[in-house]
Length: 287
Image (cartoon, rainbow, N blue to C red):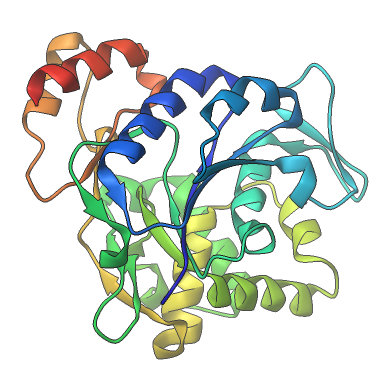
């Protein structure tokens, strides 16, 4: 039987959101072996109150190579002794790709701090009858295809894996509750290291921008193919606010009232400026 870990990178400003997520995990989630919350060392004491028999903390500093150092008094930058300073956005993606080194799990389900489970969900359901893990691969939206940043993500992946043309650029792999396999992560990072002749972390730390989900998804679908251990699905597991215009409390109410029954979780983006207590209260009222 596959061991499954729920993975949540977080930091102090998202503590209240992460606490609400943890409460919802305790209430609605089963079939996982542990919930791993990944934080900076400076946030360890704050997040320690979320630790339970199945929830543990992992410090970024424990899994990152020694040549990456947190810059004091800055949450946005890390010192890179093998290149330019690393932005927190890039660092977090490297952390996600490092999870196979931090836990014995076979499968990883990623949930950001601003995700909340709203219905029962068995993590074992991410596997099909053949033991393959689901991999979200939805159609790309026209606005994403036109976005220069998104195009750069696909160009980087294509260059990295020797892919050309439009064939590998048809799917979007970014969502919540995305599932990765240990073996596929290890094959991906080994491929990057072997091709560059240096540690994979050094390659990505010195890349200006990339998407870990696009990188993993393209590798699984277009490099490994049937050997990836995945089956593709365009069905998301989280009802994500980034697909909806939310500019007011009324918009939020409408968004939350309209969650289809097929979704076990909802994402309410932290950058919407909605206080965690507010959306937790609304979710409670809608039960």
